[in-house]
Length: 151
Figure 1 (tube, one colour):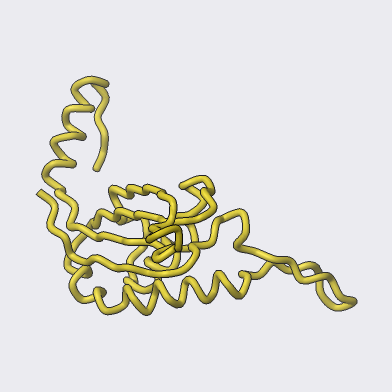
Figure 2 (cartoon, rainbow, N blue to C red):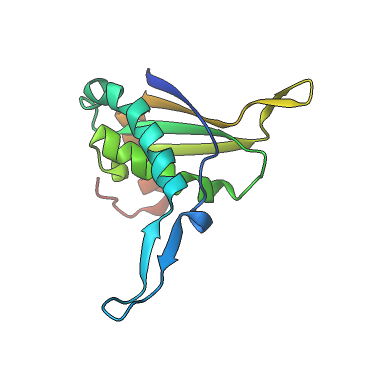
């Protein structure tokens, strides 16, 4: 059974992968350069400020599960919502995102009250991953495939 380690609520529009970068025009000295848009930097700063306080709680776990509940008025592809937020989380938690397992993401329209948007943002839940359950799952997959899987 997974234990909830942290629950965060971040208001604002999560940027999508398609709209994270802008390009500076080339000058005589430099080639074109890609850079994060200011709204992406602001979003990542909010995520980092919210997540940093959980760093000590989470650092004791080898693997953590993360569930994202995105609320957006515009409904982009759910996978495009993950990049900027996961990058900010990995920096705030000082944990490589390869240790985020499982990652689950949902998207919803914004929460409204009498037609007025009262919440647009993301709710992030971080859980301790059940490593024993993962090992059992890997072992059952090995039996089906009859090929060893190294963990």
